[in-house]
Image (cartoon, rainbow, N blue to C red):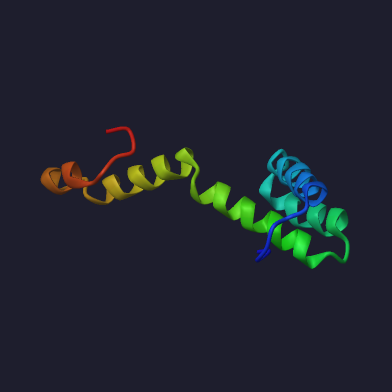
Length: 88
């Protein structure tokens, strides 16, 4: 990540590439970023950081994790009810 302020034109480029990356299947993003960023490893790092943050904050991912965790306690109804849920 950049430690200081990002120039507006650079931020625009990061934002464009980030949104373009989100439109691709995850398996195609690496190749896309390699071509789009060229030798600018800092640019690629910024976009990958944003993609990771977006993935981790995804409500879908949280819901899947909740369901998997709840399924682990299927034999123990009290434990299952104690598992926090996003939609609760």
